[in-house]
Amino acid sequence: MKRLISVFVAAFLALVVAATPASARPLEGPRAQGLVGDQADGYLGIVSSAGAAYAQQVAQVNAARRDQYAKVAAKQGTTVEAVGAVFGAKLWQQTRSGEYFRDANGNWVRKP
Image (cartoon, rainbow, N blue to C red; front, side, top):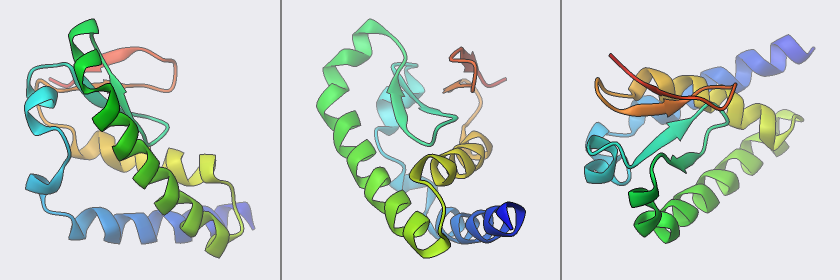
């Protein structure tokens, strides 16, 4: 049953990601500068201390994502964390060369 839920969540999030134009990604400039990046848990994070200037914007993006994940989780009968993890995998696919992504072990990885 959990696998079936994961498949539905993944399919739904794939549609959401596919429908979002790349230009709609939040904080494009700071991403390109290596100051902020997406994370395996589905949220945006601050990569370097210089990125702290964007803390309020990162918090706003994360609040919106959390709301979206909660809606999906409620529909699918799963947890917000599980939905975030599925979305995090999709975010890695969207991460551009030179941008940072925090893996499940908590390490910031620069995408080649």
